[in-house]
Length: 124
Image 1 (spheres, rainbow, N blue to C red):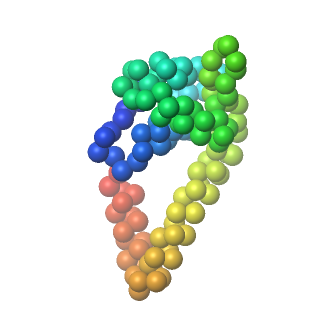
Image 2 (cartoon, one colour; image 1 turned 180 degrees about the vertical axis):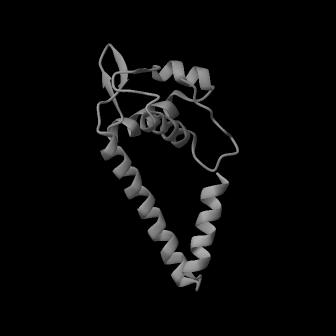
Image 3 (tube, rainbow, N blue to C red; image 1 turned 90 degrees about the vertical axis):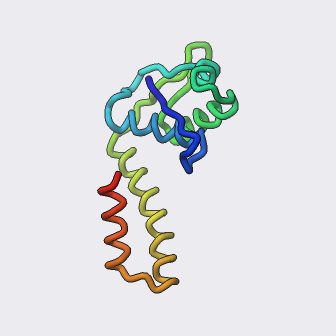
């Protein structure tokens, strides 16, 4: 499993790890029961702190993406893909709600906002 860390990213390192693992689960690249590297092993391979990887794994476990079995390791949890997609949609809607509030407060039209969103979506 490859994870890429960017120092120039606006995201914290633990968020980069969690988002990449979540994306691999959503795409089917990682499936229920697949093992993940141990915390120390991943930290060493990425040249980052063990605490950072631990934070990422704790968040992934809290969100139901992984499960840790004492003495055996960390594995991708069994979770409904539709549920995962719905959870991500809810997170996107939360952020969009903030954007709409900013736009309304500052007189930015819906058309301008939609055009900006389209440009960002198509650019990536």
